[in-house]
Image (cartoon, rainbow over all chains, first blue to last red; front, side, top):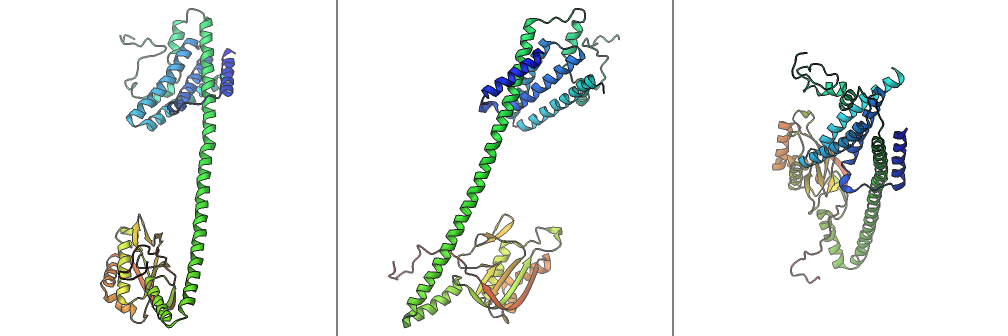
Length: 110
Length: 286
């Protein structure tokens, strides 16, 4: 309940403020968003598994976002930024898929 | 298990030896953050308490998450029309400039025609003028500033048909240069390649994979038209150095080369840029 409320507040803030993304942040934000998505789906699965913990979620969310941005930053510095971004997206994509599959099994029992 | 290194992390039996290498396996079998499981394990005895701090943290995280998503979506939406608009503007400008060039070209053509008419009218009044007119005509034919018509030959050249060795069988800009020079030597009075008149200031050169004449790119096959005596031109062409070089190309590399004579060939005006600075020494013209 409180989660959905928080999400709605965040979306509302975003729509009202519609913040301009600073230029230096633009390469990292998409990856960070995907990492955040991964953390949220992981949390949702853990919730259905009955092992959800808000502290773990909070920490994993921020560390996921931070590490994803860091990897891209490092890749940029090493000259393999776009390749590394692709790698991160692939890994996170697989995780999101299998998490969503687990959630689906919980909800539809299929 | 008596393994002293038994993992105390949740539900982990003895690890297979390739555990650290099987990235995909790992990804598929443990998609949940490993952290949830051990924390749950540790807490198994106690009850799940909801601390206000944890709740606030959860709320904050989700606020941040919603904000991130919306910001990203808005950002992407904002960028898309800008890119599209820029593209459309560029296309529009290209079209406009193209039209402008076309209009200017038409103006230039009509002005040239009226200059020629006025010139004719002035010159035809006097005897000296008529002599000048004849000379202008002759020079115009040679320099390519006048369109011409007459008998001649049409040579069609193309790359070798079997593309086994593509590079060797290709018609190069130097080959066309040789051919044109050979035609002049053989007595051609006017030459054009793919309807581009060869003038004293024409460049035949390769630009990337295409050959340009008068700065226009040509496409294969190349049609070389030459006005001259159709009875002697083909034979004399083969006697020249360039003609022999072309025979060589034909025999050794399979480059296609065919000649036919025509009763009537029309060659267009070559449009050399006007001479602005060069003057004939001793002439009092300014």
